[in-house]
Structures are given as C-alpha cells and as structure tokens.
Image 1 (tube, rainbow, N blue to C red):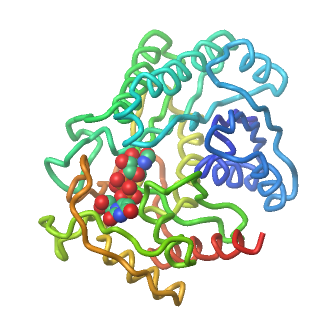
Image 2 (cartoon, rainbow, N blue to C red):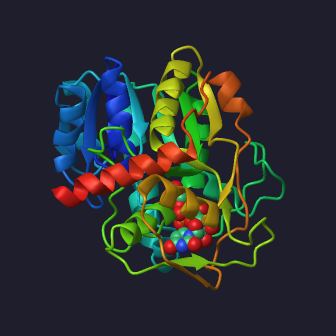
Length: 334
Ligand code: WQD
C-alpha cells in the first residue's frame, strides 16, 4: 500500500514510517516541521534501507495534499500531524483549533476529492478526562478539559459524520495512552523542542545531566506510592498498532475507535526506578505540588484492540527505558 503519513517526521510518525516501510509498504511523509526535524527522513532511510518521499507543508492545504495523493497513488492516510501540548492548548486554544481541527478538515476534503476511503487517526486517551472507572474502555464517557483534548474529540466526531455520509469510508481512531521509548537502533526517538512536558523525555535529560533534577508532580494521589499512574506503551508497539488498524480497514468500513495501551499502569516513582536500573544512572527528583489538570491514575482496557485488531503490546517497561536511554546516548554523540 502507498500510505500518506501526516506528521511523518514526528516522534510517533517516524516510528510508524519504519514499521510501514519494513513491512513493504510505501510511506509518503508530510510534515510542516513545526515540532520535528527533516533529518528524521534520513534516519528512517538508514533504518529501512530506502528513503520515504517527504513534503514540507500543511496538511490543511487541500490542493497541496491532492497533488501528493495523485502523484503517489495514495491508498490510505494515517493522520498524526497536530499540536499536542495540553498546557499550550489551554493558553492558545484558537491556535489548536486552527492547526488541529482545520488541518484535519482540509485533509479530509482532499481525501474526499481524490476518493481516498481509508484513514487511521491519532487520537488520545485525554478525551476520557479523569477516569470514572478503570481500566478505561472505549465506551468510557468523554470529558475533555482542554483545547488539545477537545480538538481530538472534534476530529473523531468529524470522522464519525463523514462515515455516515459515505458508507464506503473506513476510519479508525487510535486512542493513545502514554507513548514512550524508541526504535531499537537508537536512531529515532522522542526529541521534543525546548523543555519536555512529558515524563520520559524529562527523565532522560536528567539522567544525562542536561537537567539537574526531575519535579515529581504530586505525591499525595490515591495510588500505591502517591505518585501518578499511567499506561506507558512502547512507541514500536504503538506503531505496530497503526499497521494493524490499516489491515483492519482492508476488510471493515465505518467508524471505529480503539485504545492503544498495555492495560497496566506504572507510577512515576516506578518509572524512575526502572529507568535508573536500565541506564545505570541516578535520576535526582523532588516531590512537588500536583500539576494542574493531571489525573491520579489512568490505564487502558485493551480487549477491543486485541480482539478486533489482532494486536497486543509486547514490549516491557524495561524495553521502554533501555531504548529511550540508547536514543539519548546516540543523540549525545551527534
Ligand atoms: C505522566 C506522569 C505527571 C512530567 C500527556 C497528554 C496526553 C499524551 C501523553 C499526547 C503524570 C508526571 C510528568 C514531569 C512528572 N500526549 N510527570 N514530572 O500527562 O499522562 O499525558 O502526554 O497525546 O494527551 O495529556 O503524560 O508524561 O506529561 O505525565 O511528575 O516533569 O508523569 O504528573 O503523572 P500525561 P506526562
């Protein structure tokens, strides 16, 4: 298959590109490079042995996307492009609606104009809000509390509406829990610009001495050790989940949503200890106040993805930590 991969130079996108191309598919990367680097294209080529096509631009530009679809005879779209900082979305909601929702609208218009009928969309467990029960399944009530989460839910609902209007269309929304880790080569990984918002990249930067210590946001949650619990999933397992979703769409139309997680939660302190064991480094930390908007505990019910997509996460917390450290170590030598 020829797959248009929006956000293809990003953390998730580069790993999806590797999985697709390693399986014999062609990935055409589209990215505006607002939170990624074009050098990723060469890293993907180094891993898979051939270079993906790459176009810099905005997925909301209908004519731009239609040209790429025609030129590369695109069969399906995996839509990952979007801003993803919860905190930033609270400060600048309009920027998130413009980039995420209007971007998706333009992409969907280009797909309709070119009769592309399969899309896998990068959604997020954020749309569930503070879990009312655990593990969280796909039927869990949606409760978005920031523009980032609301933009994801808006796009899910847009996909639901166009699947009703075009019964031949197939759309799978993948609700990511907490992606971490890196490809086993250490050539690609999570490399955010500026101060990391997320736990793992921050831990890695403390371990390598780039930052003095980690702030642990809250040690008074109703969890075993008082710190936040999350369902961390290896980015390669997540990428393979996208392949499974594409395969599912080859024989299923209509709108579908699946959680991508491991079904198991780990606390911040458990993550720190696991990372120290795998890296051999100490991660100094301070217990500080809770972060606004954080939930105590979240982990996925993964039965739907397991049985419908025939997919299951297989990599361990140790794999997540060791691969993150390998990526950082290689980054430090560049
Ligand atoms: C994990 C845990 C923090 C940083 C967010 C988005 C979600 C998805 C993943 C895009 C929490 C604690 C963190 C730090 C800490 N992104 N923490 N010190 O908040 O679960 O989810 O990223 O799809 O949509 O909401 O992930 O990695 O920020 O936090 O103590 O410096 O680590 O309190 O318990 P989160 P996270």
